[in-house]
Picture 1 (tube, one colour):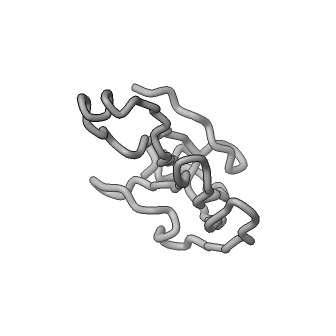
Picture 2 (cartoon, helix red, strand yellow; picture 1 turned 60 degrees about the vertical axis):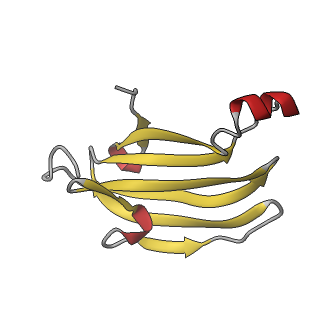
Length: 121
């Protein structure tokens, strides 16, 4: 988890959900490092999960609150439909390709639960 387990705890609120967009839906989730793997934040010990109202264009949405030591690394995962437009001939020549684009961004828990985007390494 954090570089320093003695670091002070910070309260973090993370929003996860699924929203309708052109060609499908965008899904957003957060992961927490545990040992050699990753754990969805909603399953983390002590996590408090609250469902939010789903307005137009929202499939589901929730807030996950948890206390984490300052310096803990989190990963935001966003999965969205590919928006590549090709002619039928290009599609046949190249194949369908991946249907979704996955974007992963690393963050670090900072003072008062703020999240600082980490530069890719």
